Image (cartoon, rainbow, N blue to C red; front, side, top):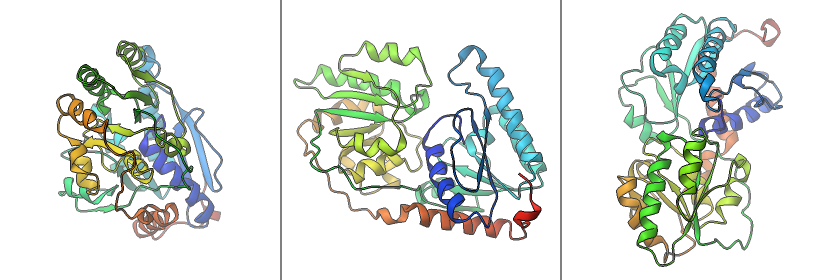
Amino acid sequence: MPPYQGGAAVDYGIILERLGAGFNRDFDIRVLTERGCSKGSDGVVYDDSLLNYDSAPIKRRAHQAINYLKIIREILFSGSDIVHIHARYVYGRYIGRVIWLALFLSPAKVVVDIRDRFYRNFGFGHNFIICSDELRDFYGWIENAVTIPVPLALKPLRPSVLPGRKMAYFGTIARNKGVLELLDAYGEYRKGSQTPLGLDFYGFNAMGAEFTERAAKIEGAAYLGGVSPGEVVDKILEYKAVVLPSASEGMPRVCLEAMYARRIIFCHESVRRSIPCIPEAFTFRDASRDLPGLILKAETADNDISYVYDFKRHDPYAVCVELADLYRWIAPERRSKEARTT
């Protein structure tokens, strides 16, 4: 799992809880994750030995190098039948090429999990999971890829929650997520509004003081820390709109959660291609240029937005069945649990 609770980590965490409980007679599952992120799941072994290099700038390179060495060791010597690895580790600059080589040398079958649009000029020799049909089309040159939906463990909405006059961003606070462009756009929006909406940020702050100091200079913007994945939908209900400034998403779970909560979604047009029921009027091509005008429109928009969407396809159990079937197809001659070691 990635070294902080981004969308990919949340997705696979939900899957592991179901796989460990319902499919543990088929697979031994081992998870390599960051220190302090291990959690109890039946049939799942968590190795929480990765270092958090994102929050320690001085030691970041050393911590990242140690993490990659541990990942390579896991790929080559864990004795697993299947290695399920997130693409961010496979294609991360030059060190990613070393991971790629380890994957080719590994005796295990390999599944590479792609959740965004960052990667090009790859796709040969392994099995790929992609989280939406539109993203599958984006990587059209990859032949051995399947679409497995994002799992959503949705619960009944809190009744009678009235949204405040504010918007929210949920996700990792990082440059590639477009948070700085969002701050710039929000500052411009306030200049043209008589009754501006507030803007709150939730998520792991990978940028540290650079982000918090910049946000503090913009009236109406606030960073409110992290929020657990299970609480996101309840939080969304308190807001008039959710803003996702990133253009590199595959199937962002926060958009699905905002749709479930019937709230406005501001997102890049590429996200709408994956989720066509999002109104085109609230999508943009350039966050810095287009968002100020879009947010201004939201001031007088209805609080509840209806979306025609089938959430059943994201049922965690159904998603796990699809993934387990893929595992069985990739490694049909797996050893029995009694003969395996972890």
